[in-house]
Length: 135
Image 1 (spheres, helix red, strand yellow):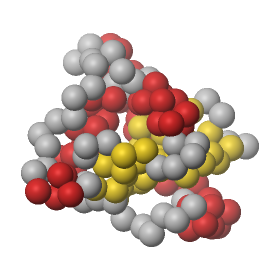
Image 2: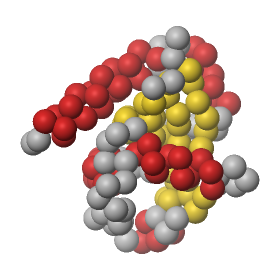
Image 3: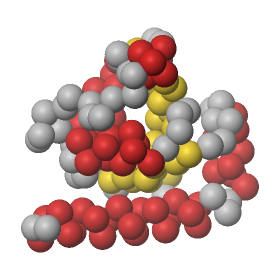
């Protein structure tokens, strides 16, 4: 493991702990309910984490629908991923993304595309839920 990978892993663990604390806040839980999150598996990540690593964790450790809690400098942003029929028929071993793609880049792309409607990919329907500010 390189120093960069270790630093990202530490950031992800810290973000997961912070997200766990935030779930104790009724306003955050209310926000997620209003946004349509029914509950279930959650992946916590940070902007600089390679998308390939986060999506691999998602594929190997969760059952859709999945909430992605992405820690950004201003707070958490949330995405939901719901499986398509293709996912149900043949669960992928990996999602093809460029090695340099980070979760922050992926969120920015999806957010721009999802302004009008949820964005569908071969594997998931992705919906941006919104942003919770850190105080």
